[in-house]
Length: 325
Image 1 (tube, rainbow, N blue to C red):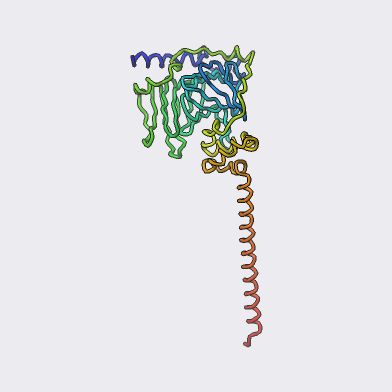
Image 2 (tube, rainbow, N blue to C red; image 1 turned 90 degrees about the vertical axis):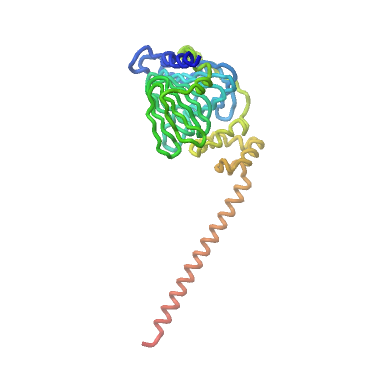
């Protein structure tokens, strides 16, 4: 059974590349310059766009900073310009083209948690809290949860770089399996273990069709579900500072408009202190006034010290000038 499972997974890359041969994939696919399209939706999936939650549907064109979240048992396929197909497994959260760090080019995808399968006939990369993966003409399957991850390269090659300052970089070939468990050091094995293959989402083993071309001609508008609550986005407000700061201008209006959002954000300020001005405006104004008063007091003390020093110097000079030789 395990051999059949592994064989099924390793047979999948042909369906993900969809390039029809080698060479420049973008040049071979007529809709390569089209927007990122949701090609398949199975089960419950939500789109968070700016301050509104939507029901994710097939044919929706995705924008920068859109967030996709899948329910248990759900599956979504995203089709990026250039022919890259991305499978999103169950209980997964990801963001399209996040703005992480001032002046840095946005990565195509930020996988906050859950399952991701990527397939491309060219180069493709994405980020997660623990690592960055740059794949070349590859099909990869990954699961991430905080600092833990499991990455399997079905075909092609990939470069995995840890993001925790450890400067750990692994060059992965087809069949390699990279892993880091809680409290353990990163490892790379020449094959994926049976326990990993057993829990890979079943949809990742199917040969899925690329459907972006047909949807690009008639994009679908997502159905709004309502404004976001703090609980809807709290996982994103507890991520790395560079990503959190880019979300502040996107969602700060909710703190102003929704007392419940503001109260929840205030209760979690230690997790995202940059929200103080919007989650606790009274406390922020009071703290700013107190800091301003302390600055004035420090400046007054410095001026008094300088005046005292000048007075002492003048008194010393006068005493010296009036003394007898």
